[in-house]
Length: 199
Picture (spheres, rainbow, N blue to C red):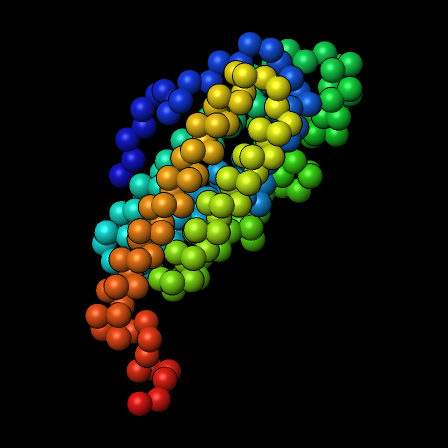
């Protein structure tokens, strides 16, 4: 189903290592609003999506989120390369380093490891698409916060690109929600569900 192209969606070339910055950016790999959770959310929601067009949308965006996770991981790897013991301690990465060395482990900046509990798959068209809209906005805010903390143009250029993609995904999910509601309204399923509502 997937075709893997061996290049990043946007180039990541970080000139200066900065483990302190990597410590906050790691949230976009395994944090509550990170790329791993987004890709798993969308790729699993598609199975219960009744409309082929929206199933395709979830597949497209879920696949793109895997590519974004790869980009964030590349940033972290490049920011943490060749760290000295002093840099590890000074940046506050010492506890992370003890468990993972400089490997990219899906965790939040706060230290909590990624968990499927941070993603939502309800199996209901409206609930899932509204969740997706909120997820894209939360990811955008996380990127906003990273931009506030980064003074490295090599990092901020990539983060800006990823932030823009969150906005595009939000717009696409909004269009998808409108299409789903139109289709449900045609069958009167959005306003009245005969299985639950009286006459």
